[in-house]
Length: 342
Ligand code: SF4
Image 1 (cartoon, rainbow, N blue to C red):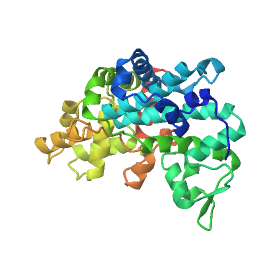
Image 2: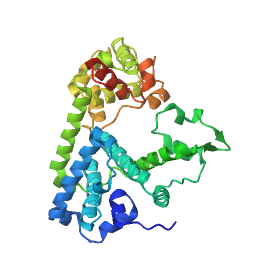
Image 3: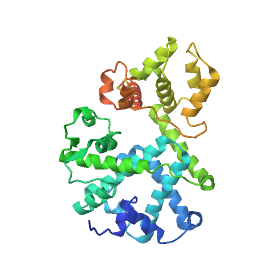
Image 4: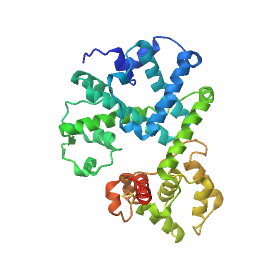
């Protein structure tokens, strides 16, 4: 497909190979770039980019002409801030951060695509392996794209499947494209960033992590067990009642407690209720799941769909119908209790 991209398109869709090629024209190493005045501005933009991804402002992306630069320097800063934002979250090694950034980038690119002409839309879609012409997708491909889409209508059992292909309605193609962009960007992260570069960027990574912690506190506030979703309450009750909890149950609860802001000591205290409590084993598991163990990877609690698959979705109540993640259930109940709108 032939399409003519303008320089400002690189700023709109920084993940395109053309955008990367545009950046490579300078033949500069990352180190040299970071020391330059443009590099210093770009790293500031990158931090702001991740901070935007962490804020709810990511829902309202400005696609007006003033929001996208068209001059070479402006576009260069925009594309390099995209690349550096990916480096920063890769150094941060927190899945939730990577997830927020890719969600934001997909949402941002999609907002621009909606305002762009059809040829460009189709071209960008093709670059992430999506075609608007297909009215159905092979099952494996469909499952790959929709694995992170939690609404019931996307579940394979609720779809029309004919000869190994899942039927797609024209209006659904747009939603699938946005998800395909997110899945593609997510599959590229974390980047394998040299340790020395992460060291150099450590102050910026810390700044992002602070914003993230702050956001979590704003979202979740003080831990309130009465707002736990039924699935987590069931695991806590089983724990207190001396019942055997599966490995996946422990993982789901620990990740959930960590995600809502409980520190390791508080989580271990909760596990003390179990009759077979073993402090060193529990400490190891908690540290591992909360990202303080060997790999440095922080885990996010499983979604409702994953909890169902694991057999951990127990006694869902009316509030469960409005959520696709136990964390959303908790957040929504807490906001309800504090009188804030959901
Ligand atoms: S629907 Fe989700 S939040 Fe509700 S019990 Fe099941 S897994 Fe938990």
